[in-house]
Image (tube, rainbow, N blue to C red; front, side, top):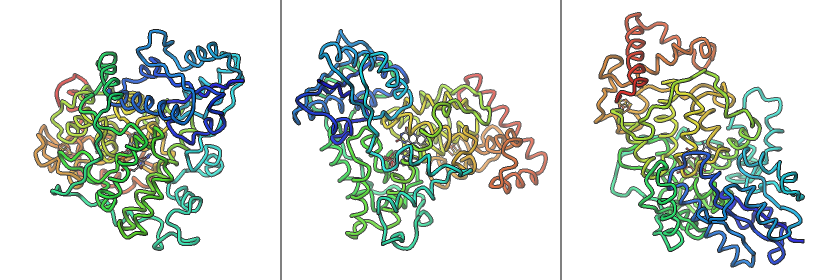
Length: 512
Ligand code: FAD
Ligand code: SF4
């Protein structure tokens, strides 16, 4: 009998396991744009438009491959509003006997599928998502018995498993990690690369009109919209990255420049996460660029590490610790998210820049997310659940499996250091070293306290002071706590006072 094959917004891959298990002229692919998914976060308008347009294009692609596809648009009057509802409607219309489904990216959706057999009265066959190198089960076995999880060791296993940048049993060039050669501050020049841009076609134009009409109150600017929405367009974006940006990817990975929103980053997470690009194929392309002599090893190794290292590791952490991971708050942080996270309306130039570009592009690169918006949230003691909801909403690449461990674990230390050996806390000096933001900021990065001092400077010390009971025993923080301890009393008090004044103004909703 006919099987239903639901395909979710982040499963837009030809080789999806549940599609491979189905038969095109017998089974029915079910795809739906539903209010439930639109509403569970205040998703950026560009994110909604990207996903809906990519889904509609993928439905066409599947039809071209001979599949029957039942596709429900968000504005279809008969839309039940939920994924379960849409699968139930398809089951009734088709007298379907069973469901074939690839494991979803998010726990919330997996829990929903758990209820399908009872709810739909159908047998549900689940398939592992083999678009990842490491399955949740493999990760759990790797993690077993380890007190702390370190990405670096996991990454070496993934290098061995994939053979990427391996010379026999040894890493190419003799070292596993070339980060020591990376992390230079950048300077703007005339030859900065830019991500591949695609003009909206008729399908995207329709989606943009629908998102504007139905979700126009969501965060972010919808236009100009330039994301790739098909596999071929995403391939073109990959080509452009390899040709223009990869060679300097490593050098400027941690740099930030005013007005330069993408630097040498790939802006490929959005396509990888939705399934338009295959992670391993992307890594093989980068590897080939090294062997062809087009890109240096430090760049290619760094890029591959982000994908088979960090991306896989983060996913492993998520599935190992869900449910419950997203509710953690190790430091007991409780401050409400300041309004400027939605408007960019702050005197702090680094935050204003990162948030304005987030509003415009639904994109910020890693160091902006980690060391600007994330670092501020950590230092100011913002409620991790609120910060998590923000990150889940505002980025086009945000899916909970990858967003949550990055936000709660890497950035906020809300998981108590499951994989970060210490909080990524930094004062204004770090931002000044890696960016040109401080040059024309309202605040002075060289000043440590007082009304015109950079808030990151005193908030940094105040954060350590406030959390001394929890963090004081961390050996990696020993040197900074000793520095704090040796500081003259009046300097320490000045930092505390400045922080108290700043945080009171923040809580009162004043412009800071
Ligand atoms: P590049 O710098 O070009 O890196 C190449 C690829 O490596 C990325 O496309 C991505 O697939 C992968 N990658 C790099 N770093 C990470 C990482 N830490 N975790 C997982 N994959 C990584 N990434 C998301 O995909 N979705 C999110 O919702 C998300 N939320 C984040 C929240 C916070 C607080 C932080 C600190 C990081 C978050 N990241 C998230 C990770 C990272 O910032 C983005 O993957 C990256 O900025 C995407 O831009 P890019 O494609 O230009 O990346
Ligand atoms: Fe940000 Fe401080 Fe630099 Fe201003 S001075 S841009 S607040 S780090």
